[in-house]
Structure formats: structure tokens, C-alpha cells
Image (cartoon, rainbow, N blue to C red; front, side):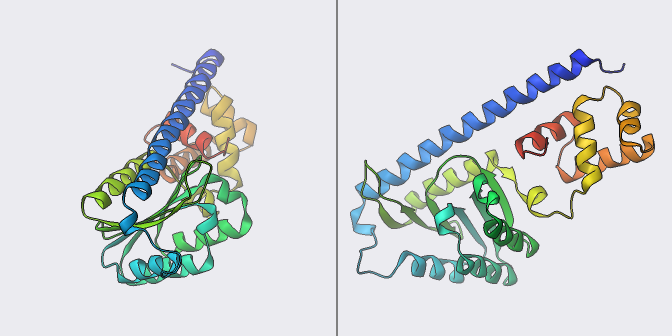
Length: 252
């Protein structure tokens, strides 16, 4: 049965509501993580890196270079540097899995986008979160480095955690990862061309494939082929999921 204009409007409302809930979930998780890291710095000063100790960057470089299986990192804007990217690429070349959580707004900066795209080309997995978060680096799911900037409630600092405390940070990272958006579609322009983006726009308002194809001046077969490619690239099982992820990524 063909979809009507009212059906499409209903889907649009559902997309908006799903997106609102996703953002709310992300903010709740990030707020928990913020409190977790601040509490760690306040409760365990014995593990805190002193001002005269080796720099946080040195600790991060050591943990990254010594990782044997996996490096997980939450990378705020301020910590994204060419050196951090080179360290990630070196891990990937050794066969180490690299997962990066980044702030979505970082992609608005051309230099930052280029750095993340380079990581993806070498095989890293990059996902995006809205909102603020602190730096977290976890090596081999055993040792965690956390860094918090000073604010009105705390002087900030950095801390190396192991054992059970590192396990809590690992659970926090995994939860954030499950709610984050895959960045590869936005960072690899080869995945979607202009026609794909036009098909996405048509899918948002055309009630039938024939209508969408006619608007774009392509055959129905070509239109449906591009829809199938979009589902694959957006890792969606249905058109609704594809539309949701496209909206989350700002493609429509």
C-alpha cells in the first residue's frame, strides 16, 4: 500500500522524537561520566599525575605505544593533535584495534576532519557524540588515563587508573560507544556522492519510488539501487533507520 503525505509527516515526527531521545540519552551518559572522572580525581590523589611529573601527553604516548590488543579513546577537541593521530596510526599498523569517540562539532573544523579521516583510512573506528566530555584513554582494557580540565567545581588534573576503577571507566566508554554515531559516512566522501544525497532528500518526502525517481530524472531501477546503497552505507536495515541516521548525521 503506497504511503500518503500524512504517513511521511508521521515518519518525520517519529524521526524528530527518536533524535531528541538519542540526544537526551547521550547527555545523561556524559553527565555521569563527568561526575565519575571528577570523583576519581578527588578521591584518589595518590594516583594523580603531579605538575612536575611526566606530561599527560607522555603518559598517553606510552600507553598507546605499549598496547598489544586495543586502544579506546574519548578525544575532546583540545586533545586532538597530529601527534595523537600518528600514535593511533602506529597502533593500527601493529594490528591493534583503535576506537575513537569524538565530539561532533570537531568535524566543522577542516583540519580536525582531515585528521579523523586519516585514522579511518588506516582502519580506525570513529564515532561521534554531542556535548562535552573529558579525555579518556584505555589500553588493552586494563589501564586507563583520564584528564579533566579545571572548572568552577574542581581544579582538574589527570590520573592513571588500573584494576576495578579502570573497569568502571571501560564500562562508561562502552556505553558511550553504543550510543554514538558512526563518523565514516561523513568523513569518507567516497561513500556517498551527490546522487545519493539527492535520493536521501527525495526519500524524505516522496511517497513512492516512482515519484522520487521522476523528480531526480533517473529510472526507478537506478533510484532503488541508490536506496539499497544508502541502506548499506548507513548500516540500516530499513528505510526508516536510514532516514534516522541520515538526520542524526545532518545529511537531511
